[in-house]
Picture 1: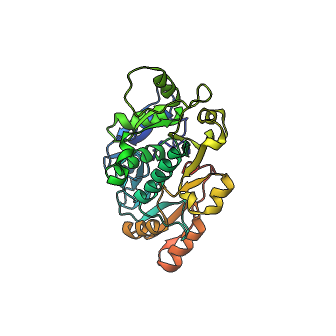
Picture 2: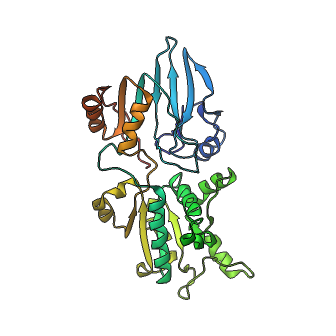
Picture 3: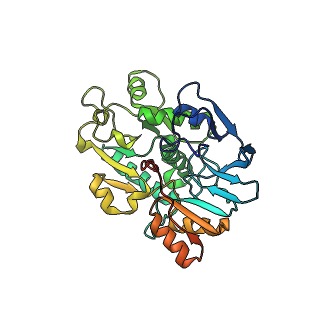
Length: 335
């Protein structure tokens, strides 16, 4: 049962992979060609062994699901996978699934992690982009190739409906190849996002004739460099030769979109110019709200600040709770 297609959850080696219908195409891009994938509609139940199993929307990334397992005796366990409660037009909204035992992620399970409205962070990103462009600089935002990057493109498109940011909808965003592949899957599914192209496509377009502006253009300097633009790339691209396409460091500003940016010290240590607190995980408030909403009598936090969450749930909420350890410590590596 695959909760979603991030590499720390969608592992190779199974004979059959069960996933959501919404996430099938995304998962297929992550697995080897020919893998047997069985896609289920959200809420559709099947029988595995003596248990009744179904998938329910988690709101983390496209196709992300919680796994509900009901025993023959009627006891219900729900494994949340990764989830968030904020609105996100790129995927189905989180569904509260009542249960007896709730296995919840705890990535940001500390009181310091409380998200503000996403559009406010995206507006800050757009202003940064506009200011840098006026100075002849490019902005490169690092984010995860699946989910976060497409959410940024979707949020920027929505932001363009506000008069102050109407100019955004006339822009094309440059994408790293790893981001571009997943973005095509989202676009094919009908998700509204800003127009995009890879740097190679932008360079080819700049040499063509009759292309409508605005198109990211080459600078007047070295051949192959792009002019002022916004680009989205995975964190692995930082410091790579790919970054040279934007010219010397003096002409490039970098940012990172992640819940970890709530802590300024983390941003400074990683060397980003700007940090945008945009997370695809539930914050402290929503973790507690979700636990209450499920009505669970037992809670098992996994990955992250599990002790903090378990202690709070047990001592402040009066619900039985204890951390659930993971065999593989890399679980949760993709925020």
